[in-house]
Length: 204
Ligand SMILES: Nc1ncnc2c1ncn2[C@@H]1O[C@H](COP(=O)(O)OP(=O)(O)OP(=O)(O)O)[C@@H](O)[C@H]1O
Ligand SMILES: O=C(O)c1ccc[n+]([C@@H]2O[C@H](COP(=O)([O-])O)[C@@H](O)[C@H]2O)c1
Image (cartoon, rainbow, N blue to C red; front, side, top):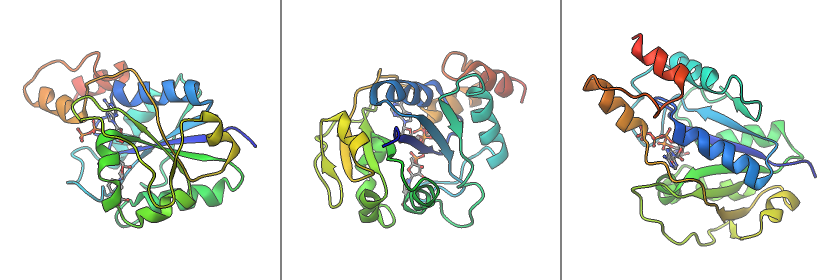
């Protein structure tokens, strides 16, 4: 089977180095073909982003321009209504019928998974990989309906979907909330966000 495709969905308001390290490290560690960064249009469980769809997508595109293993996917920006992850994974499953899909979630996002729209369908569309999030207690990652806990990275390659794996990445305690707060205070966000994003934010 071909190498799995990783998917990191988010609001990316703005994209920061925590997001990008997750993608780069998981791509190497899990042997992913590439990781798709998927900005949402209408976040289902939070307020609308401050920055426009176009601006958030541009920040991501500029941040990953010289990193071939990362891809911007605007499919949620092109879809009406709330940006439900199950719908996104269904679209990607139809587009990549023979590729394992790996949906990546920080611990904070994973903690809310069982409240998501059609969350019980997710295991029939993709694997789920959970990474620690500084500031969010690490809780045991147990099997859920449709998602079977595994420690074997090979399972992500041997099956198309349905595995749940906890992976380590370098802990980086950066958040988009922190970046937005610093900007409001007129303080520097350099080295929290990629340089092209820092330049764009400074010029605003
Ligand atoms: N520093 C980080 N470490 C681990 N996971 C992270 C980190 N930042 C974001 N994530 C994960 O990336 C995904 C997208 O996150 P999102 O775009 O909402 O960023 P955020 O920093 O959480 O934003 P905000 O502060 O606006 O809530 C989520 O699964 C989230 O858990
Ligand atoms: O599908 C849902 O019901 C759902 C509910 C909450 C969050 N999500 C998705 O989870 C990802 C991380 O969310 P957030 O709020 O941390 O940016 C992002 O892609 C959201 O669209 C999805």
